[in-house]
Amino acid sequence: MALRHRAMSVALGLSSVGCAPLIDYSAPPGFVEAEADWQSQRYKGKDSVGLRVTVYDNVDGGTLDYWSNDLKTKLIVRGYALEGTSPLRAKNDVPGLRYDFKLEREGDEVMFLSVGLFVTDDYRYVTQLAGLQEEYAGLSSDVPALFQRLEPGGCKVGKDSVCRAKTNAAR
Image (cartoon, rainbow, N blue to C red; front, side):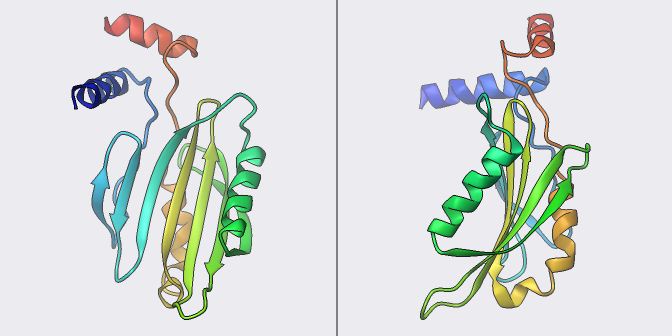
């Protein structure tokens, strides 16, 4: 518990100097925030619709193309059918990709999953909108706007010179 508290304190301290992964995203119209921490935010929409924004560390060589293929492969293996792909631009002009999937399992209701993927040198941002397929029709035109509200940013302490300078100045 103490380690978790210390990790959260470090994360909060770094975010105050601009060196932690940033999730700059607020609840869009029609959604309420259900849960949030420094790495992810979950929102609840009408009925079965949920929205999640998560930031993960990137690795050397982790490009948009690399993570795009990884994401598609994992979801297809899990039974999702890729329905479409389109380019995105985040609020701060970071390029990304949108994927629309459908999941049909015998005896279950049909589900939709739309995923927005943005990749920076240090982080990858995944925005997921999911729910029952019948509820997707009312949301489909809003999906790009939901994903494009995100402003991917942040840097890793010690790796980025701007981050090092901000960290040293905060001491």
